[in-house]
Image (cartoon, rainbow, N blue to C red; front, side, top):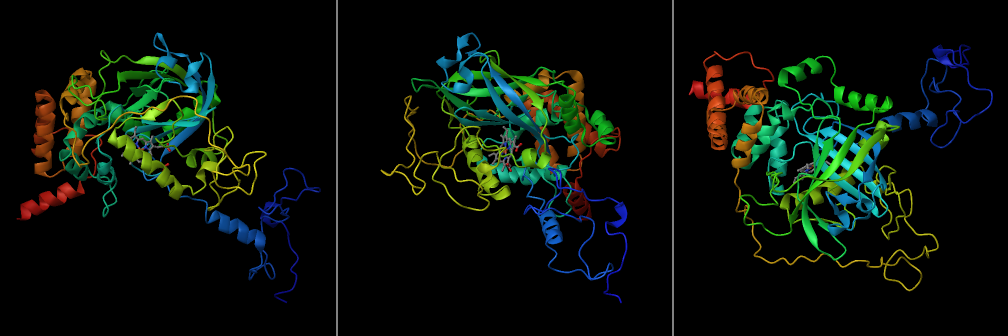
Length: 535
Ligand code: HEM
């Protein structure tokens, strides 16, 4: 009958036979049960129906149904690898201990394992790696004193200087909520009303906005941090990574050539180089400024839209990073890794940079949601040293962070019953004096245009030409008042800069422009133009 045993090939069409004896390679369920048949669901007769008690199938398919976690809200597309950081023991000509007591920097030759994740910012997890975008450069140092994360970008400045603006900035850069396409009209609408962005835009729309790959780009901490020495004295610090491979950027047409053939070229380049034993290296350099407001400068040292001029604040080398081991599993390491600007070790500190402080809340907040409450217990995120806390429970806790020999009934502090004790204080705290009125105000020394103009003038001719082409291509569909505002901003940076963008836009409007590459979708601008015509 239909439900009777129907003889037939028991192991399905593959013809595979199970092993005679279980071995280490024997397939099991997650409960550890050896799995004798991974080809066929359990059915009444070989034509079905299926049964619901079929645990191996239910376990397999329901785990598959949960294989994705939320993507990072920004920087979703990335590649990661392991490596090592080796300290010089010095900062320029001086012993590094003069400025910081952080242990990882002290001795020449001291090695600290690292994990690095490079990324692009705006689009999703499998978007092309040729897109115009800043590139993330995030480094996790597994130091003997716990983890330090240096969460940076390739470009050394940023669009905004106040964390309050970040969600708006990202919304303007992300695809339109209706058309689901990135739209130059929306991007420049926001940017034209955010004049501090013009320095970053000058980098981004030049070839510097499309690094050729991850190995041949710089990195920067962007925000201002502090170093603190054994006396508790602080200095302001900016971090930079300089690639030993040199720097290589792409023009828009070059990027389009690559994108038509390979949308994973940067991930592939990094992986293949490391597999071939061609280990990429970056030197870590810092700029140092005394810890005060520096009224003599025409910019605020805490303003992340500014570079610290190299002539005044030289780049001083402190160590070398070598990336030498690809991840064993992409999801396990690269997707689940969680970096944050709050993750500092003793001797490294925050500055009062209000962007940095806003970022510091955002990272661990999103990671508790994206990865889960106990994300710090995952191997890629856990420090490579002992962890002992009184934090307990929560989703997916799979270890209890107690210390050997401690009374495990005591999950609180203080206690006289052999619980965890506070660490001894080795050095004086850094105690900057802060006073002022509480307020919501922009900084005084905004100086939005000077450095952007310098950037424009120091570019090589081909970089400037590409910059103008890219700006014109992406601005040409924006509303007229947005175009005018942007031209005005560029003119304030450099008269020639504004004039060239304006002429380019006029040519496009007259239909005499060349075929431009990389034209972003400008739905909003086009709709507005159409509406204006109808009026
Ligand atoms: C990733 C927030 C500014 C570099 C992220 C993520 C958030 C975020 C929520 C996702 C993190 C995750 O899911 O693990 C912010 C906020 C900012 C800000 C609120 C400003 C207030 C910056 C700046 C830089 C930067 C100025 C460059 C120095 C990065 C990098 C990543 C990232 C490299 C990716 C880290 C990784 O590879 O996992 N940011 N960000 N961000 N951000 Fe920011």
